[in-house]
Amino acid sequence: MTDGFDIVEATIDEIHDAMEAGDVSSEELVNAYLDRIDAYDRNGPEINSVITVNDGAVDRAIELDRTLESEGLVGPLHGIPVLVKDQAETEGLTTTFGSEACSDYVPDGDAAIVTRIKDAGGVVLAKTNLPDWASAYFGYSSENGQTKNPYDLERDPGGSSSGSGAGVAANLATIGTAEDTGGSVRVPAANCNLFGIRVTTGLVSRVGHSPLVPRQDTPGPVARTATDMTRFLDVMVGYDEDDDWSGATAQTDVDSYTDYLNADGFEGKRIGVLRDAFGDGDDPRGAPVNDVVESALDVMTDAGAELVDPVSIPDLDEQIEDTTVYGYHATIHLNGFLEERDDIPYDSVGEIYEAGAYHEDLDLIEAIAETTSEPTEELDYWRQTLGQESLRRDVLDAFAANDLDAMVFPDVQVTPPKISELGDRYTTANYPTNTPIGAQTQCPAVSVPGGLTDGGVPVGVELLGVPYSEPALVEMAYAYDQATETRVPPETAPPLDSD
Figure 1: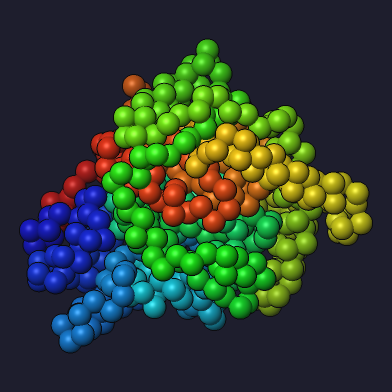
Figure 2 (figure 1 turned 135 degrees about the vertical axis):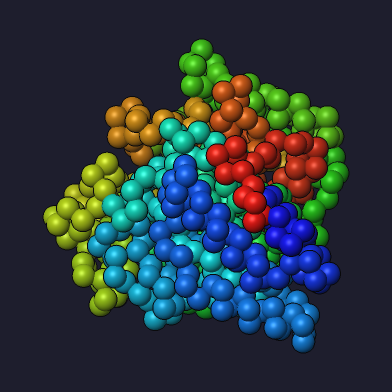
């Protein structure tokens, strides 16, 4: 407790009500979360989700407390402590991108979403771990080592937004930022029992984030409730003239996604069950996932949804494999990002690779480094990139043919892997995640906490929509949240006496 206010699982609305009642201050919140970072991230279970704590967070909180007294709440995140994935540049604060190559890099400006967080009254509490340059589905980096899953310390929390997923799940802050190129909002949300949404590419600015595949890259929120996810989404979405894809914001006239927090959000919705994306029910790693997803389907039908079971996408696995463009696009865009920053001592992924300045298990870094320096001259660059349009067409056709509002499937076909299996049983190339379906078609998707397996580890359930269908996804995520009690805090990070 913090002077009678319980911060564990506290929501933005609860915090703001307590602030206005004088029951808690932003300064108290920041200090309480810092105590939890010290107790559970640095010590105790050593979750290891945080790379850098913001030394200016307390002063920022004090400033916001003074503003509250004189002006009231200044924005939707007033005084709210936020974990920021260390893929986003943060002015005056070390930003490593998870790489030992950037241990001393301090940007002189903020990423676009960091600016939006600050303008909304948020407090950047700390920067969180990610695999070097967001290049894996797992939680290890050359800068900070392995992040643990707070639900099972022997398991991985999912990547690349591993630190934000684990940190928010363990109540080390109120909300967190993630970034999704192939699934890095949704995989950690799934593995850490959180809500997370990937938007249609371009609705959220990527400026100030290290890129991989700009046609797929998008920041997004992770949160413990659908409401907090949506409030944070409102802050993130907006036009940015410096982002070439930001014209997507002209395709939607949503004033606030919170207008779609509808407890009856499943009523009348037609949801296609994409059985081809389910894992092997005879595999002891896949069967528990399928069991949880089946229970989630029952929740959806009980809440008014009509299931269309099954639906299919032609040659799904082959199309996903044939439209994976990381090596080609990252060679262009990540190298360009490095070249533009004089304070980073390497100008290309190839130089980082040659210097060995990356985590040894990052097969994608190696693939990027070994890609030709002129990818657009390769036929496969165009074949795989244009193939994404064919995949997108087939996905949209399945929606139209079945008159669907969403498709549903597990985010990942297996339970969160054990850390000992990483780099051996599982690599980024073979990890059985379904999140590329949305990423490689630039479609939005939301991950909701399906619940815990009998073994106590989380399973995420993904709802995929068509471009610009975020309002419907928010409706369904909120309705699911209201109909279930699947979000439970991990036992490894219980309340402190000071909480």
